[in-house]
Image (cartoon, rainbow, N blue to C red; front, side, top):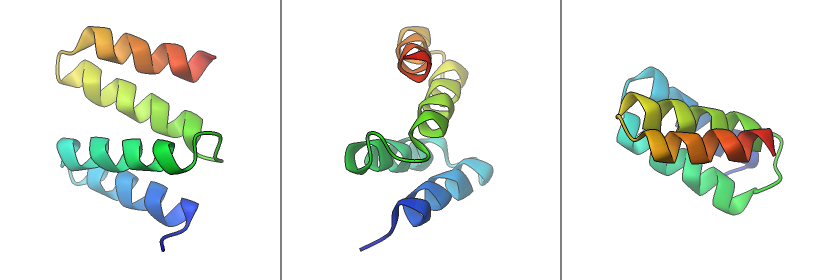
Length: 69
């Protein structure tokens, strides 16, 4: 089983490779497994950025609201 850091790092690596769909899935996987984890706020931020880039502004707003709370 992958650790918290391994899952987050995998998601971030996919983001850097511009594989946004895969990165989004991996960040969501991270948040499902570690909703209060060390990288939860970072994951919400990147999910918001990906949604915004995809033109899904409502979803982006939702992720950024989650980040702030």
